[in-house]
Image (tube, rainbow, N blue to C red; front, side, top):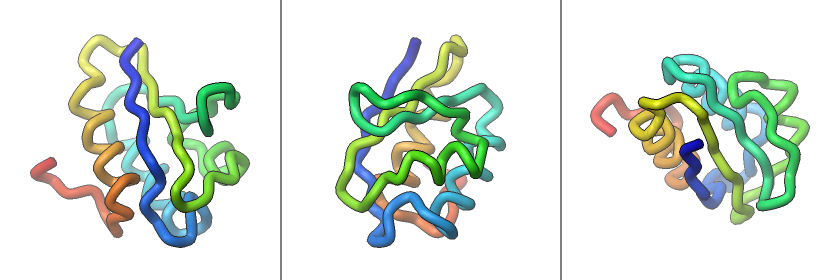
Length: 94
């Protein structure tokens, strides 16, 4: 299992537009990814808009991205960058 802990960088948290951006990026990652809020949260499918919105992750809170795929490192790094920097889209060069 590969994990990345990241602080939510979007001012509005992981809600509405940012959640949509995140879910699209997770779906395009090429590996199954889960996300949970904090250490003890329940993991949800990172590509599920309802699951991600249900986390209620606010700006400055920590989320944990995880995948059991062997080649997940790059995908998790790109998603972590997207979340921590509060980007409007996933940079292709990250």
